[in-house]
Length: 380
Image (cartoon, helix red, strand yellow):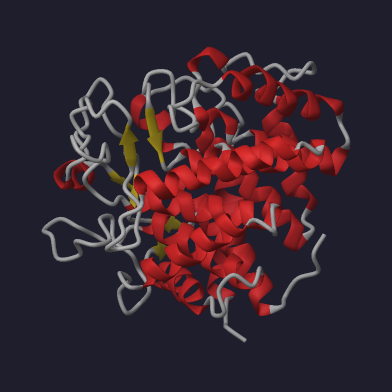
């Protein structure tokens, strides 16, 4: 059995010294809000954290996690299920991520507010979400005709779970078609990895004029795909397209990992000046790999466990206050007002931060799978 005492301490300290003491309208883990002085609103970053807390609850039974999650969501969702700080006409797939939290809380508590919330997300946004000609969702209204890997985590697992709960096979078929589109449009046959985005019009400054794809493999986008596929595979255990994509992607990523398990911001260009081992994407890979082992999709998930332990040993520093997780890429995107061109220089020039939820939440997620792998849980 693997010694995970250092990881146990990191998780305990994060809960006690950073997460559970955060005010819902000013969470300490949302570094973007602090750096860019954003007003609090419904967003995918907080959704990642609360989702991770509810996953952690399932393996620990710590009721503080559900109580805090309810308190947090109550600051953003009204009794009728509306979310005043979210605008469905933005058609922002990132906003769907919090729907997973609403589903989990409804299953735990039976409170109608949560059901009203996730039904609204599906009916008021996803049923009207604009689509590419291939049938996949636009990533956002401000990114028309564009398919981004991020949506595979933000929206498709929510759709799959909604479909199962409401017994709608047509939605399941939609999810699988969209996964197939991601494989067809964004997968590189030589590496087995996926490009960050695809522009159907091939007019964006970042898009290849022949393929429509962006030019680089960005680790966290690939990590979102890994985690999204792993979650969908658990929801839809008979989905051959999902299981096949996940197995192929995880084994492909393993070829680009360092000996200690870490993956780089630009995974196929480790030697490039300024490239670095990036923790959030590595942790998403670790989570997906260990979960894929549990689901029987890969035979050996030790690469995920190794990556998680390396992050714990090398990239977490303990202090009197909360632990510090480093080497987190703050954000990454394509186009927009700043004209992000998807180049290697762009991805390597994005801010590197500490203790952002895009790193801490995948750490908690991967920890839950490591606990299962170690046989140290009584699943709730």
